[in-house]
Length: 134
Image: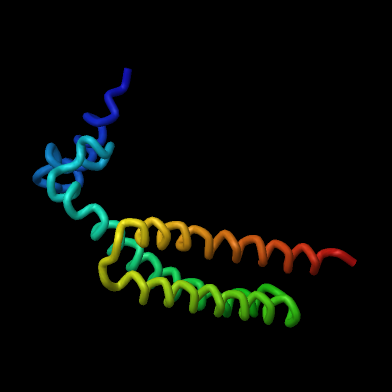
């Protein structure tokens, strides 16, 4: 049987992490977290949501030229408007997550972070599906 924690510990150690024995158990489950992660869990999650939202806001908007080159005018305009709305939504969420908050807010921000791209995927699917119907 494969020992996953030991395998992950070896991988992390190969990557140059000096305290792999302390790091890996904290990654595998809530009861195994280090005291620092247990105390600051909300702050860790909030900071990751903030960075991910900033990166997604930039990348979603940066993809508009690809839509322009790949689709006809009526399709790429709809997709570009949707991408701008998604990018602004991610920027708004990044703004809201720039400082700490209650645990319930962090859970809500996490849910919103997953809802934004899911709604864009649904909208873009509708736009692209309507373009293929004659």
